[in-house]
Image 1 (cartoon, rainbow, N blue to C red):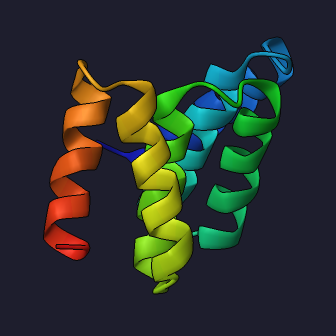
Image 2 (tube, rainbow, N blue to C red; image 1 turned 180 degrees about the vertical axis):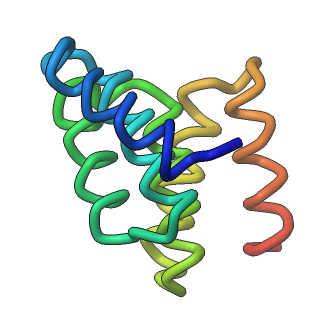
Length: 104
């Protein structure tokens, strides 16, 4: 997949079309994470959480950014929140596995 060539312009268009949807910022954060733009990823994911603090996905993704940066307290907090918010779903399952792996 050509993330930089195709994904980035698509996310930029999505940001213009749906600037009030938390999913827009969650996706933009994931895209930034994939290309290694961690400050941008964190910024987008925090915007997603500002719009929807009780959504598990941005917590999971922000936890991954924090793990990548080596910020264990922030990672653990966001992963735990994702696990709590989606305790029966796939996001919660993934967050639980990451918590078990990195914070046994």
